Length: 294
Image (cartoon, rainbow, N blue to C red; front, side):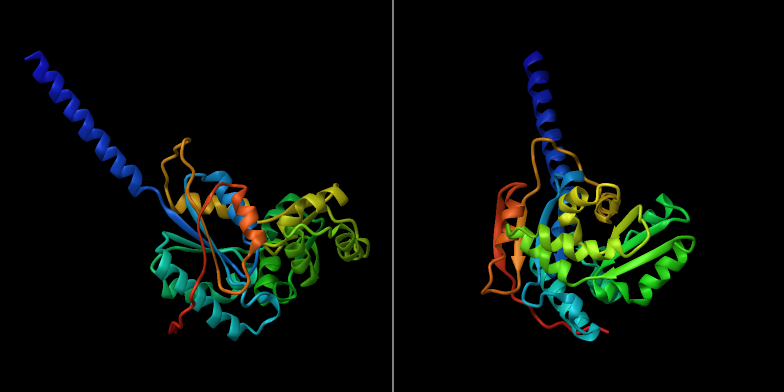
């Protein structure tokens, strides 16, 4: 009888382990992170740090880079086609639009088109304004983001008591891309951003309103250490945590994938950056289809 009970106990434990294994595997989610270039890697880094067990796929539309200089109607169709193509292939549980320009243009269309949660990024103006009430704060973004009515509304709602100094720069996006390729951009960065900083009253906080710009944080902080450089990365990671409950497993990191749209141009900078977080399980160009939307 003792051996029977012992054997039955082992069977029960085995069945319990199988159920737990199935439950854990069901809770292992996949997130797709999208940008036109390498900027979205700043968001991916924050998500990886907070939720290391999530499987992350990074998609860059390098065939249409940069987004900030293209007409909105062209970008809307392009973003919907690229993202829907990737979702169809990868079947992720959540999509992050890790680009301020793409978020302001395409979020409503993507949320209507897709059945999964779609998270966008917006400039962290509220955070900066709360940190410097009544003070001088900066907004460093692309010209498209700087000039949008959406940005005006954010400032009016959250920073009406502050003086907000805006600087729209497409050049800084290109500098970030070069920095990720290993080029020395320090002199160009100091000259470009320094002219703006020197021409404004002392700013205590500057919002990095393009996901490319946090990649330059080490250089920005070293050159202007008295300024607090603020971005949306951690807030996005916490939002993902709210939407996708995960089981933490310290022994296993989620797999990493890399996709891009220009089959002739392998994104070596993105590959190098991702490989520092772990092995890349899959890297390949994405075939983009046409999708109808309203």
